[in-house]
Amino acid sequence: QALTQNELLLYYQPKVNLRTGVVVGAEALLRWQHPELGLRAPGQFLQLVTGQPFDLALGEWVIETALSQLSTWLNQGMRLEVSVNISADHLLAEGFVAMLTSALARHPDVAPQQLELEILETGALNSMAQVSLLIADVQHMGVACSLDDFGTGFSSLTFLKQLGAQTIKIDQSFVRGMLDDGEHASIVHSVLGLARSFDRHTLAEGVETLAHGQMLLELGCELAQGYAIARPMPAAHVPDWTDQWRLPGEWA
Ligand code: C2E
Ligand code: MG
Ligand code: MG
Image (cartoon, rainbow, N blue to C red; front, side, top):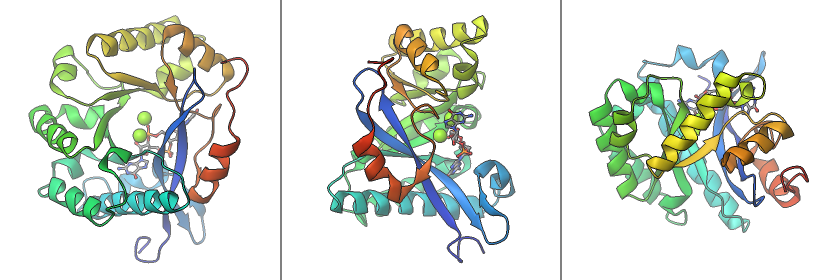
């Protein structure tokens, strides 16, 4: 009902380069504008969907909506990169690549390079061989892939070697905790080292304060996302936000 009654929408959270101040893109995050309960975040409803056939329809809606938004922004003179969250079930569903191909074909003005799929590390762990083939197929189309919430699964070196995703998103629990917890800091440090060895990009999630950003810069992690930069926002706010955002002095 929520889907047919147009109650679902995507918010966008900017991703920036902490060193150069460049806005590198945005992550599309699902929201449900519930008629009585108001705006709901995925944590409040997504578990109802997981494992259900509707999961696939929802994922398609997210991809379609993000591509339409990219197209709208292009018409307004703004070229961004947007990442969408894809459930492992959806990625592994029959016809995923064909669906993605036709979605891109419906938006010929949007380059495949403007789209990225965020795949949960934990989701990918269960069927590593299949997921790794799918990532290769998707990347062959020009669409980027990243591993979301990295560090929360049972990642092994084999896992990283096998999955060709270009970007590792360091889970926000480690980033948020790294200022007061040496073990969390060690995890962030190790993931950065691992990414360098395997020639992957890294993005830190959960950058809540200027101090988090400073420490990430010291550790050599340049890409970040978090409340200290911007909260997820409606699509209509993104162009103005992008125009007015300046790198905080502490990071510059
Ligand atoms: P995620 O992909 O790891 O997204 C990051 C989450 O962290 C978002 O929560 C975002 O609002 C929140 N966040 C960002 N910066 C900060 C920060 O500095 N501090 C804190 N405390 N939180 C921050 P959100 O939007 O509630 O989404 C939660 C999760 O739901 C996402 O985690 C993702 O796994 C899932 N999700 C979101 N949209 C979709 C979707 O379209 N499809 C699917 N399958 N899953 C989605
Ligand atoms: Mg994500
Ligand atoms: Mg994440």
